[in-house]
Image (cartoon, rainbow, N blue to C red; front, side, top):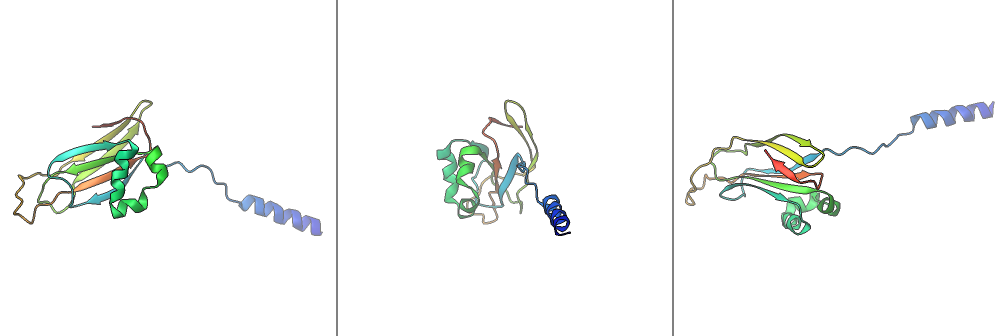
Length: 141
C-alpha cells in the first residue's frame, strides 16, 4: 500500500513539474519614451558597435536596464523627433519584421516640427530608445 501511494505521489509531482522551454524573446523592446531631452533636429540613429552602445549607459535610467549581454547581442535605435510644441512623443513603431538578411523597422512619425526658438520654454525635443534583439542590419522604413 505504501508503494502505491509513493508511486501516485511521484506521478503527481512529475506531472506538476514546470517545463521551462526557452522563452522566446520579442524581436524588439521600447526602452524609453521621453517627451523632452532629445536633439533639435529629426534623425534616426542605429547603434550596433559596443562603443556606441556604451554611450547609452550614461543615462541613469538606461544604465539599470541595459545588461552586458545586450551590448554584445542587441542593437539600439535612437528615434529623435526634433523640436516640437506637442505635449507628447508621436513617433510610433508600427511593426518589426525579421527577414533572413535584415531587420525591417516600420515607423509612423506624426510629430509636427517647428522652427527652433531657444527663448521659448514651450519647445520640447522628444525621443525614443528601442532595443532590437538581433545584430542583423536594421532598415528603417
